[in-house]
Length: 253
Image 1: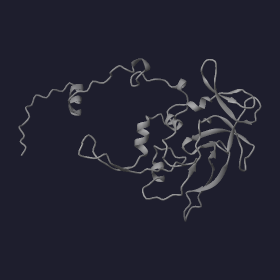
Image 2: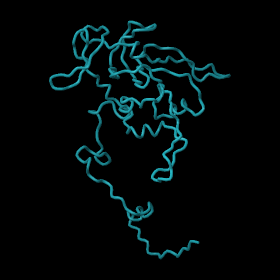
Image 3: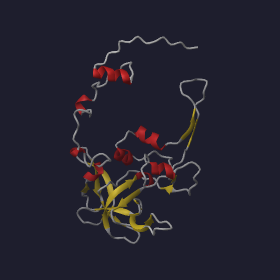
C-alpha cells in the first residue's frame, strides 16, 4: 500500500514537537480555506472550500516558504510516500548512509522531515547550487544537504559494533519504551538533541520567567480577570486619571 505524499495525513508528531506550537496553530498556519459557511446557524449546511493536498518539503509547515510552495494554482508532480509504522529516527542519531556517493559513511541526523520519511545528515548527500545569480552577478555557490529516505537511505549505527543495524522497539523492566539493536541486543538511547525545539536546546536548560511564564504549580491558577472596559480606560486607571466630564448625548437614526 502506498499513499500520496500530500496532506492526506496530518503533520508529523516530531514536527509539532519541534515547533513548540499548539497543533491547532500549526494547522491554522498552513491550511488554505477559500470559503467556509458560518457555524451555529442551522439554515447553513456544513460546507468548506479548501485546499486538500499539500506538498511537504524541507520548509516547515508554519513558514511563509511552505505557503509559497503550495500556492493556489501551482501544479506539481505527484509524490508517493511509503507508510512507516513506527518512527525510529531522531535528531542527533548516528546513522550510516546506504545509498549514493556517500554510501558506507556515517553522520549525525540534523533534521527530521517526518511527513516525507526524510532525514538530513550533516555533511552527507550534498550537492552544489548557485544562489543570487543575475545578469551582473555570477552568484554564490553553496553546498546543500539533500534529504535521505529512512526506508532505504540510512540505518541506525549500533553503539557497540559501530555498524548499521535494524532495531526493534521493546520495553524495559521499568516500563520504558526503548530502541534495541537487532544485531547486539543493545539499547540505542534517544539523543538529547531530539528534545531541541525552536525555543530551546533542552528542557533542562530552559529558565522560567516567574513574571510572565505560567509555572507547573500555577497551571490551574487564574492570572487574568476580564473586565468590560476599553484599552484607554485601562490606561487611565493605571495612571490614576479620572474622567469627570459628562459625555454629550448621541443619537442614532
